[in-house]
Image 1 (cartoon, rainbow, N blue to C red):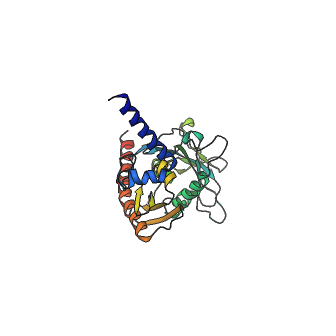
Image 2 (cartoon, one colour):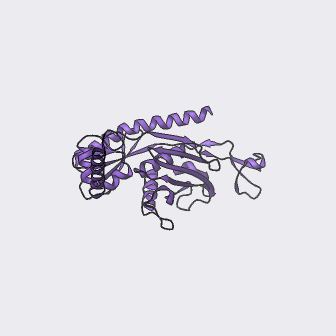
Image 3 (spheres, rainbow, N blue to C red):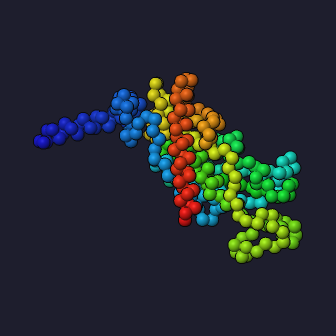
Length: 303
């Protein structure tokens, strides 16, 4: 190949790159949607590879590291004994925080909290409680006197799209790994956690004698899709989300029942047929995620 050919190829490449930067949506439509292939070579309805690692944080009562493609979430659950409210004497409480440090994305600036963080935290809390994933009465220790306060902290380590899906999966995985500690009554009649530092000594009366798993009633999973013209793209990357605004997040339980449907952005109305298409893709995705979670739990039990 002579210098003229090389110069010509470089010129064409620069023109294509300039077109992609100036008109990203048109570029995406002509080079990907029409060709039925996405930038990462996935089919429209296929989600990215997903992995779950349980017990990622040794100091937590339950934890998990989840990756969906490059999107990475670290979830940790900590338990504290609290006094339940007078109105709900037989229930514990749940507090959810979602953090997006600057390392997760070039769009997150140091000293400026990401605007998505409180929205996702609220969405997670609503989903966990409305789905029935956790029965707050399971967190009661002594009626009207003591119950568990559950702190769920999720850190986004890499924000490459579908953040809620990965955050919800990390929460479910962390709760699946959760071990509720042994607690007892001390000489003052107060509930105390029996720690390994004191040799597991129960001071007076055991409230629960052994560590136990938290009973999860209806495990919820989600799938976010992009709707653009007559296309449905499952599990979008950050690049795809930035180009096409209309997102729909479908939350289903492990039985395939619809828990909720979110449409956080976009100016185009989601037509019924498109939403049905998203639900169909979510149903298949739930089966995949249930298997990934079961495999992670089995691996943990073997260890």
